[in-house]
Structures are given as C-alpha cells and as structure tokens.
Length: 317
Picture 1 (tube, helix red, strand yellow):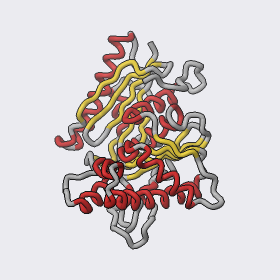
Picture 2: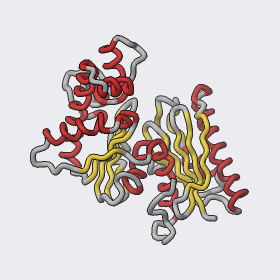
Picture 3: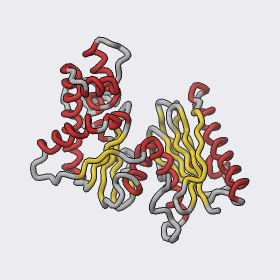
Picture 4: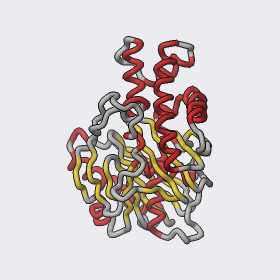
C-alpha cells in the first residue's frame, strides 16, 4: 500500500504517522524528543524514529514509504532542507532533509516549520478547508502564524513569514527576547496570560487555563487580565488582516482551548477595530495537536504527485 512518513518534532515530544494515499492515518506513534541529551541525540532520535516507521511500513504494507515530511520548530530553511536554529532543541544548521533522505534510502523528504506545517493542515483539510486565503495563528508559549494562499503556505523570502507574534502592539511595552519592545506575544500568548494572572491572583503556579476558568466564574481580576490579552490580540490581528486580507482567520494553540471564552470577546474586539477591511470568518482550529503531523504528511504527498487522483484532499483521523 502506497504511503508516506509524517513526523512532527516538538520541544519535548515527537508525533509520527504513516499516511495512506487516501489520507488515512494508517499508523500513529509518539516518542520523547530527548532534548536533555543534547542536539546530536535529538537528531539521531529523529533519524531512528523515521527509520523505524519505514521498517514498519515495509512489514505491514509490503513496501517502503514513498516520501517523508518533517515539521520542526525554530528557524527553518525549507528550500535547502536545513533546520537553521531551534532554541528549545539546541541545534544549529542541521541538514535534516539530506540526513533523512540518506537514512530512508533516497526517498524525497520535505522539511517544514512546525507552525506553518500545522497551518497547512488546518487550511487545507481543517478549519480553513475551502478557503482560498487563510491566516492561521497559534497562541501557545509564543505566537506564530501561517499565511495560506490557494492551499499552500507562504514561507517568505527568508523563512520568516507569519511571525505575527512580533508585531509591535504596545510601543515601549515589555521587552521581547527578539530585541523589540511591546511585541504581541508578550501580551496575548498563553505564557503572557499565565504570567499576568499569576501576578494578579498571587498564585505563582496559576496559568492561562486557570485564568479562563476564573473569567467564566466572574472573577473581576481575571476578566481584566483576559480583556487586556484579547485587546492586544485584536490589535495584532487587525494589522495582519489589513496586510493580508484573508477569507478565514483560524485561531489555534493552547489559549484557543478556552473556546467561546476567548472567541466571543475576540470576534467583538476585531469587529470594533476594522474600518474598510472585510471581516473574515474567525474560527477555532479543528485538528488539535495532530495538525503538525497531518501537515507533514501533506508536505510529503506534495513531493510525490499532486496530480495523482488518489492524492489526499482530506485526512481521516
């Protein structure tokens, strides 16, 4: 059975799958990334994981995978197939595509940025399915995005397209590790909300999920923290909408798990801010933590033959 390998490498864990020609997830498995053992060990673990998946495909389906797709965090040169830098994994300039191609017996390998790859899946087969233009925004420890056009995601000339978390929304605000002050992710990421709520409630262990629950229970302090984050997020999103004019705006990541506690005030805040811009459909992501792996599978299938009638237009989860 024709299939591809899909790998989503995170800071602490790796998700992987074998994906069939009809988009079915034939085999799914997870492993620890093992970053505590250093970057060389992380790379070795990725190669071993991919090789094990290839072997499983041969045993189970009688043939090796036709291609592989891998999503990794940090700065990624997708054209050259190089994992340029990832602070949470400690690597620099890893020729990951070449290493995987060699380990997998010469099959084509696609390398993608984790958020852009997840955005590809959400835009093509998830919450943005059918939209010719979409913007995917992941609200996690930081904030990053993916710009989708006609089923593809734009990487940019230097691999930095979609870094919406570093739009300045509060000039002279809190310093950001990127070197600027007042970046969106310093006010509206899950990490930022956790920090603000911990300070407001006096519990150093409180996080964004706790803040959302307190908002739902009517806590005035929580509502203020939450509204500050929503306002900052709306400011950043309207800047992005003005530049990109997407038809669908997809919000994912940990903060989006708050559901309508986030989406109801966010839709209203965005609506209040727009003037001449067209209000896009603002929807929650649909694929959860499988988006990166599913997107990696799509990258792999793109390498084979997108004109093949069996090319997956949807994925069965």
